[in-house]
Image 1 (cartoon, helix red, strand yellow):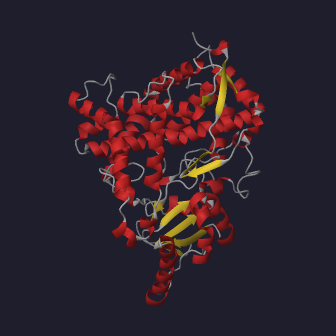
Image 2 (cartoon, rainbow, N blue to C red; image 1 turned 90 degrees about the vertical axis):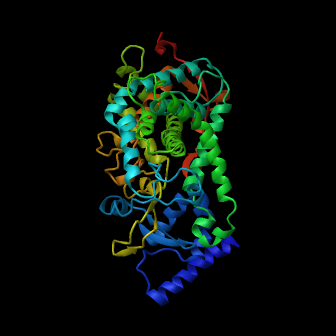
Length: 493
């Protein structure tokens, strides 16, 4: 029934618009039957499906799902139109009904705020001061170093055993961001059990999926009257978020910040002192920042390890560069920017394996004309960063892993070059891009400097499976299981 309505509604809308209001000059795109043909691929591999549609209809295309107009940018020039020329107009976000049913979501988001309003600016400013700015990153350098060495010691204790790299990366990153936000760890990484990591990873995946994926009710508001499941999903997610952050917030509120061991205020201190945010709102923004700092960065560290293990000559070059740069036995993040080839490998991984292939969807806050086409208010705008980053018109040998392309290149990850948008660009660019890059450097640099890595049972690393799985973000389908061997000459005493 829902699928039939999803396909019937666009026909009715087109009829009404054309005969009653005059046809709008929407960008070209597939008709209802073509959308039906592509529907499965649009759900399970939308970045690939939209890349194929762009080859048919051009780099600016549109189509309908239910009564929702979808607009897709598939070239650097069109991405620039949406994210620079008309950045303010397209700075809105679509909020799935599940997210809107989550208590405390109103005015409590940095990433999913429907518009760039007062609360969005305040939270982003607090995050900038505490976590994202150059000064904050320098202040928090000891946190990254401490948590990374916790990771190194954890892996050292498991030498010769098979480790699940994604679990370890996630736990380390979660402790880094939690320490920066609330001055405490989420996990005891020295423990051998992985159940607590897996529960939190499951919650992160659940929140990502339910807060960024539109369902039938979002495309067909007519179904809202019989939607009995969205609120249940939201309340289930709310209980888990509250269980994660509620006691931390309450303890800090009761202590009035006196339990904070740091001499400076952290993010939690400042939002509590502001007094305008409820416990639910604070829990939601902490969850959002945790997700932003862990999910995409974990994905990138895993893919970077995959690509280097599959290319042993590149791996040797990175190791030699680290050895020549590091002073003594201790990895120092202040020296890592000198490792230019290692940096190029990170940039190439972010190009070939864009963590969020369609970025976070934009919303038109008002009707706007782009390239002589009308983009109606509340249209959903997708930027196919994955498709652009693999387009042979802009990248030579686009589907191959070639870090050399970034050596002596002016292309950076800060969204100033529209053929390369791993963290987005414009007003809604990921605020933590620089922190993410530092974390990737420290994590993978430590993995390579302190350990040798092999596949279980001595398998050839060139056989590592590289199939991807799309769940809003684009992950390695099968877990990366590796066996570490200590490089004793590099371990600090």
